[in-house]
Image (cartoon, rainbow over all chains, first blue to last red; front, side, top):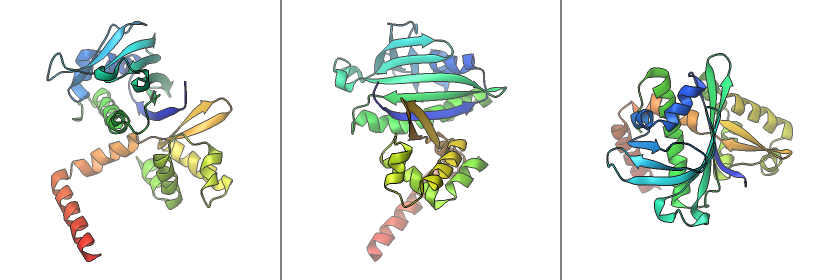
Length: 147
Length: 104
């Protein structure tokens, strides 16, 4: 793996399982991930889809699950469905959940192999920080801030 | 949140964040190269930034790469800016920019 493009870290007062589920469970993601949910069985080799909740059937991002070790580590590829066959335009997301002190976890999202200067790169740099703040807010208070 | 504000209060630390924004994933050596700060000073600032979670580090072999972590900044923006009538502030900001560019 080359040098990561982005690394995002947030500390969340919740269990690792809750954080994992927050990302992988469609019903939970829909509550904070700005009209999107993640659909997959999360087994290695399976596909996953980032689907619009307000426009069912509209898939904004697709990928494949590379590693899946609930609740510690999830690695998947990431691409715009139109570009999924072009290796230059497929990036990789690594999600790591580690215990932090007694009652919190450290969530690290590393996005790598992003094509430099692409729209995807620009979109990601705005998207992830807001999504992670919303996830944190949702798990800690039960309320998602709108993304 | 105190740690974040304190970290941001120093101009040298803000400069470090700007450098990482321009080019993310730099080593300590790369950061020191282009700054008029001693290696010691940069290290000290990076430790504070890391404690405030504004910088995240990734090990690659023997190197440590530093990344700007904007998540806490996003939280501040939501908590202290967004709720104060974003659209009105935006209009004011646009007016200020327009007037300032007409002056110059």
